[in-house]
Image (cartoon, rainbow, N blue to C red; front, side):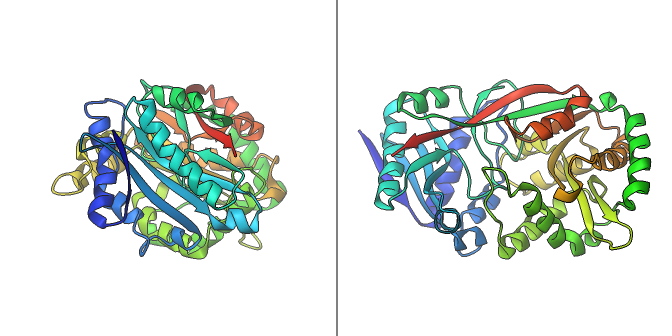
Length: 373
């Protein structure tokens, strides 16, 4: 018999976080989170995302063991301000038992109907900065710290329960050596002169901080037209600053500024790959996990492109050439080998056109699923 249990206490939340550690034990491609960090992320008194989101945590129990988990999420801004009557679910993990999946998702459906919502979509997080999608291709590719990994049967379970494809995301990678920098140098020189632009690089994390708010404003302007966009509050930005900025190598953040106004025109954030380090850390920073992460921060030969934003007034003008020229310099100094891109919507033709010049290889696909109510 499968029992559904709603969880609340910090001890229960930790058990919720630990479930994938058993589900993916000895899996070479799953990348574990830092346990305490994940527990804190779900603390409604600490994470400001809960100011605009209702979330309920559930586990499925069989033979006194957790066999599945899910978070049922209602983003109130999305529902009340944008008029999108969507029920979200995320952090969905389950053993290969369709009955377990049915119990978990039936609860999500029940909550959606109680709140007069029109459809369910998942797996997704609280907003655009969270992980998204069920992996449907690339199960033998190493995961990243900013994506979910899952077994192949997740897709089958969802489709058996009547869920259909809602959005598809591509993940690509390319070799550093495939960046033909000459064209970017030439284009960058022309663009800087034509639009009165300049590059801005950093060597210290503290020097980035005065620009973070402006960067998120530009992020919002860049992505507001995408179907997945949900605004990020000032409190969430502050939380992001404290949680992530110190992990990012300052030389891996690049800005393009207008010379006269000193306004931000474009930005890109990349991060060294922490995947192998997180596997070695096994969910714990101490006593040794922190050293694996610091070593990766300094010596990883793989880099992940996390965010790119361009002011709409400068989109389609090629200003990303300036960013790529600056990244090429920094990556060359670090002897970077592989460039990995985070999930991008399949129908975002502009971003795919941007990357096509680097001879990318699609190595993973992921998908969100929808159920109309």
